[in-house]
Image (cartoon, rainbow, N blue to C red; front, side, top):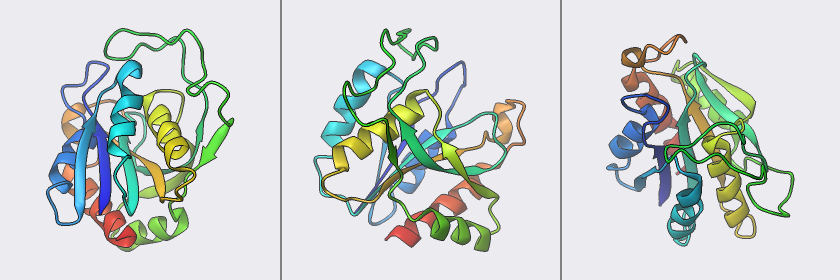
Length: 189
């Protein structure tokens, strides 16, 4: 069984394609979809509860409004942006996600294989260095921290905005994103 997460809307967005895809693809056989809060105080508890289950793989999704393609993230860092508030208006007082935790965790998904699969589907994609300093990064870092000893494949994928969001980047229709993420899930299954 695969876990696919996305996020609720944030930063003035009316919707979040990552949450849309978690709901849409989470209905398929062998995949459970969940929508995470954009809330530093709640994200760890949500992930602890979800990751208590024995997953075959965990794929975390988020939207990156400035990116025109699907980004397979390589690294999550133990850092959160102390100047960018979450949906509850909270700005972290300390930059560490996990006090005393490792500086970073690498994705344990087969990124090159997934990139090749997306290329086969003709879905624009790239391998990106880092998930950034916001809740996308925090979700990947926490998930990798919780799953580190188990060895469960886990990583993060950023999605571009959909045409209706008009965020300044080249948009990608949700059906194209769904085709790409479905292919990722098939590769991991």
